[in-house]
Length: 501
Image 1 (cartoon, rainbow, N blue to C red):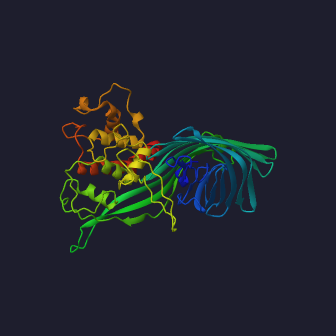
Image 2 (spheres, one colour):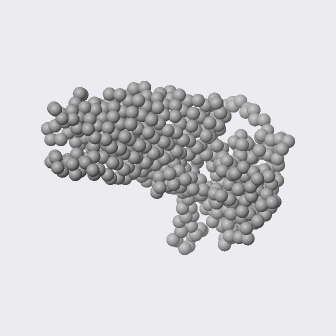
Image 3 (cartoon, rainbow, N blue to C red):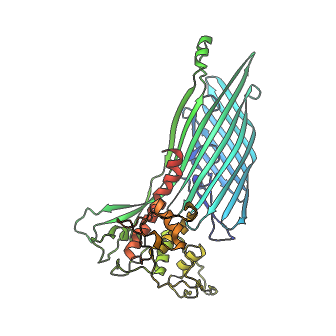
């Protein structure tokens, strides 16, 4: 599948800035697993099967191997009472096309090999369902925007089981859709699966036939949150601080429409033939959140300041430089500083481990811009911002690092980072701001989108002031709003709205 089912992030060597989110860690069967980020280990797993005519919850493990050209899944499951067991081995080929578009990746999965057996015991009787044919095809596309990788896909499959070798068969037609995203602050994958089940059992001179269906909604979610904790000790150097938490959860909701099979009296069967065994259920896995205390800033000019909480959050995350005694919230933010804040907020620049040896060949790093050389302390951040296409400079290969940033520029940078400019209508159009005519043409789409999704609020009087310089305090508030959007709003769109939570 695709993404956060295990969220596996592959870095393509052809372009180190294209990240590829491969989902479907637990396979395409509609089950969920725990600790999906740890794709190298066997995971706890749950799945509900319906091919017997009733929902049966199975639990156990799934082992996943993700290779360049193959996906392999091994399941070992059983019911709580031990009366039902399932063993399944699936091998899929991977065909990856990353050459057709500079930021998009297409993956196709086809079945290579399969082996599945379900055994159901009832007293001294035993019924064995053996997978004798499996037709499967899946395709997924990743669109790798500067700070978010979006993906979607779909699959179709047909599984045919024999019942006790030659006593009958069950045919399960499967269709599925995947929607997901992955970024530094979280990831969500939603799967919507539909199964049509057709059952035929030959017993002497009689034949039992029935059909039913099941719908399965699966959500894999990983989120980083920032929580504030008061310091109960009054006599202390600080009054409280923030903690960075990270948590994963997987949820499976299912509903089914199956026949009643426990009626033997003919008259009763005529009555229940008009009825159906309908129901639903929910299963989930949650991991204990990891916690990390954040740095407590000691700026002397922010206590009681209107942006104090936002400044403390960014300082705690080490996005804001905390070496200075004063923050200077009313000063305009420089382009160089805003670039650094953005790059740090979404973890664009990762520390590299350099080899320890007596001689290291000097790196050749041409200037990112003519006015941003390797000697600039923020060189790596500006380089990452440029290579991602988030900030392109002011023209003539200049960045103007010490220049002030306007509100229109700041919003354009954020929306460009998200890659969602397409949400704006075709021009001409207007925003809801009363000073709409002052918005530069190059910023109009970005400001429209930011207004629609709640990132650009404007003044209480309805003005945006697009050409005013953004202050450091305003930049801190704006960046925190951006981080919150990544944390919560994406999850709402990709899980809550699709699944109707």
